[in-house]
Image (tube, rainbow, N blue to C red; front, side):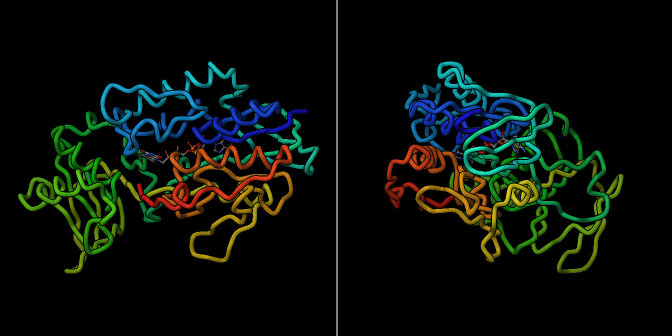
Length: 334
Ligand SMILES: Cc1cc2nc3c(=O)[nH]c(=O)nc-3n(C[C@H](O)[C@H](O)[C@H](O)COP(=O)(O)OP(=O)(O)OC[C@H]3O[C@@H](n4cnc5c(N)ncnc54)[C@H](O)[C@@H]3O)c2cc1C
């Protein structure tokens, strides 16, 4: 019987385990993939938009080579903290169901059954892509996860999306020899693209190095082409690969099966106490980016790591103060 089982070994799940341990609670983390699986899935050499001190956990300093951490530095940092804290993390083990009640939960996973007095759900959003929902989306040439440009040299690549991830993928592929077409559903690039990336992409579009279709939807993906609906009608463009950077969302089925309830808003925001992070199922807490529902830019590592202390204070019976406004209302969007 553990005091706490944390579902998900992302930065926030790890922060919860550290906080629990420091409060004298026995915590176990159960992770369906690798340690910090979402960050492992980010593009190679990706630079975080946060400076390192803002994504530290457990008070461990995060030294980096440059001004901002790279994906590789972050993975190593969180691994180092996990080792140093001797976090009991079970990897490549998916949580399938949570039965029981506060004080005696039974967590069924792909490998075993675990028992715990409290559950923290820190499952993030990165392993559920927002689909285009068009014919051909399951072809092997389509991906929702951009890794690196080298497979696309001299290839015709369609990048779908208007935000940071799409902008970065389009520029990266273009700079490594791909013929890039950007397809954007709205009339313009997102204002939320980072200020150091947006002018670069705008200028590449202006000079014709990257072709861009605005107010355009993908209608169908075929073996050698993509059918698009533009403001001027339907067109078919030659294509080898599609990189759909259309965002991600939490695993709502898992959350529902755990008994999480949702607000009736367009974001499917999970219902939880804003100070303690306890959900309407007593003893079950939410932490990190999963708290935002479809609003995946609402919470991130910078503000999500503070959830750990709130939750552990509640579990140990200490009164938690509300999280400072500036820590939680700092909006961004990836
Ligand atoms: C490209 C990109 C760049 C980003 N850059 C920044 C940044 O610079 N600064 C910042 O603060 N934030 C950034 N974010 C946002 C934030 O980093 C991530 O969303 C962060 O990983 C969130 O941490 P988390 O612990 O809440 O969730 P995650 O890191 O997503 O962790 C959730 C974990 O739960 C696991 N899991 C899911 N379901 C199950 C299950 N059923 N059983 C067991 N395990 C499960 C997943 O495999 C995953 O490892 C970025 C996000 C993206 C996509």
